[in-house]
Structure formats: C-alpha cells, structure tokens
Length: 483
Picture (tube, one colour):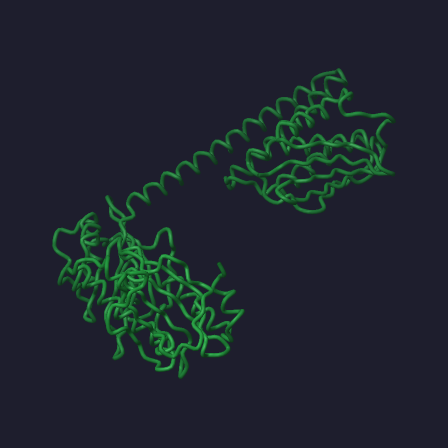
C-alpha cells in the first residue's frame, strides 16, 4: 500500500506547507474518528480536479468499521454525483440524506472539504456504520457533539491545533476519559472514566458544573503549576498536555481548545490514569540506575585488579613473568573500559568508537618497547550490542598489541584500525607495515596466547578471524555478526 506522501507527490500539486498540514491532520484525526464512531478517508485532488485520490485512512476504536478494505491509492474520477466531488465543488460540508448500503451495511456518509483561503485543500470523508451504532446516551451524545465541532474546525482549516503534539503511547485518547468544558470554563460533561481518574487524584465531589481550572488546580496544589498551561489552553493557544500527580495517583491530561464559526467554543479534555505507567517507568529508572552502578563498581574492581597486577609486575625479577603480568593487566584494563562506558550511559548497545579510542591510546602508551607508534582509527564501529562489546574490546586490544610487539617490534610505525558495519556484520581490519608473518604461518598452529584468546572469543561471537601478510602489509581481519 502506498504512503500518503507517495500518493500526493505522484498525483497532486500541493506545496510543502500544505503537505505538512495534511500530515499533521492525519497524526491527530483519530480523535475525530473516535468521537464520530466513523471511518475517515482523506481525498486529495489530482492535477485534474475532476479526479480525487485516497491518500490516508483511519478506523474508529469506539465503534465498528464501515470499510473492511483499505482504500488508500484508489481514485474517484469524473463522478459529479459523488459526495466528495459535491463537497469539493460546493466548498460546504455534504452528507447523504439517508443510510446508504455498503456491502449490505447501512452507512451514513459525510464529506468535509478543508478550506484554505478560497480553495479546497482536500476532503475528509466520514463513514459511520449504522448497523452497529451504539445506543444513544449521555456519553454518545457528548462524543457526537464534540465530533461536530471538530468537523467544523477541520472544514475551516482550524484543526489540527498548534501546541503539544500527541505522543501515541502516552497521550490520552477519547476512550480513556473525556470532559467537555463550556466557553465559561465550566465542566458540562465528564465521562465515567474521567470521573474515576479524578477520584484517584482525591476528588470527593462531582465534576459536573465545576470550574475546570479551579478544581484541577485544587487537586494538585503545591505540586505543580498547572494554572499556566490550562490558562494558555483557555486562551486558545493550542493543544497542551500536562501531568497531574498526587501521592497516590498520576493522571495525564490533553487539553484542546475548540472553536465554532463565531469564536471559541470551550475545551475538549481527555484524561488518562497513568498511575501504573508512571510506576513502571520509575521501576525502570531505578533498575537502570542500579545496573549503571553495578557497571561502575565492576569497573572500579577491575581497575584495582589491574593495579595489583602492575604492582606485582614491578616487584618480580623474571622477564617472562613480568611480561605475562603486564599482558594480564592490559586485558583486565580493556574489560574495565567497556564497563566504564556502560556505567555512564547504560543501553542495549554501546557506541564502540569511544571504547576503541581509549583502548588504542592505552595500547599505544604501553605496548611499544622502542620507537614511536601511532594508533589510528579510520572509520566508525557504530553501535555494538553490550553483550558483544566486552569480547570485542579484548579482541581489539590483543590484535593491536600483537601488531605493535610482533609486527613493528622495536621500530617506529603506524597501526591502522579500520572498522566497518555492513549487512548486519562488523568487519574490523588491524593493519601494520612492519615485519611480515613467518613463512608457512597458520593461526591454528600458533603458540601465541593472544591469538588463541582472539580465536576463541571471535568463535564464541559466531564470527571469523583471519591473519595474513599481503605485500608489505600484515592484516588481521575480524568479522562479527551484530544481529
């Protein structure tokens, strides 16, 4: 199925400003669909304005759908009797005089032209399934009355509003709880869910007939300055979202100023009890802080171990033992670097460039026994899964140390580290232009502990390791899958 932008770019002559407006409408129009219990289709005129294209569609969550099939990408061509054509040409809201049958279901259809100056930008077609229509009651009447107001705002190019954008996973929807506030700021209707949410905040009276700003402020006094955003909403400065919090409950409000043809028409307020959601968020924050603290302590402990190994190496007389202790110290320090990064910003993935740069500096400072060695990174590791980062840090340390000690030996030179992510795989080349590998060299027959560590760790990660001399360059290549 084509996207809205693809349909518009292919068939229409709308500019970027009009496209942005229609995109914002589609972001917010689920509100109208839920209030009207209706499916909505957005029709845009072709270059030939006798043709219209369906570029977006939404179904209600409060009632049955009227359209089982998706219609995005379909067209209305040269049909003067079609309701969309009638609304477009007449620039007025049009509707059927009676229920039309669609696939055997009685459907009430309404077409709302979106005016932009003296032209019609697009047409919103509303389809209401009358067979599954909800029984009339105060809730349904309040929904439909608000839907009528918002339909008029869509027609006059007044909806969507400016202000806070809706956040799909947090912002309240109509079914979560709805209040209708009059022009005077008095609550004239509150749904049962809205009343329940306010009860959790500590309300002991009814919401009907109360001043919306005053009663909301009284429930959260000395906790947050809610009067400013509410006052801004009452003044018609766009939609706003705010959180009310007490010691026992959290409620999120979405406040939308409504407008009639003759001026402001009060507010539509949706509210959602987010107590459980906020509780889970606090638990996640606590767990995140705990995990970061654990990484911090592991890093400190590893640095202590590395310091002990360094002290022991200074006190031992055997050159071979001193070298082994120094190698162990560097391996422990490499692991500590990863835990230090994780302690600063724990996540499922690590920005490994920071880790690599610290490791290269460490190896360059302590691995060279003579001459001057430059460690250079060309390219980016990108983000590496946290469970891969520790092993990869050891692999990188061993390869760079091996390049310095065995490739460059006591001469000056440069070690190049070239990382690249491609097709879900990380490829790392460690290159030096020093001593070539011995003739007939094979990794499997090598007695080097460092190469044995690299081979084992790469195999555990499901990757491959290759070491070869080509021309005057010796290259160690590691390939590790990241997904």
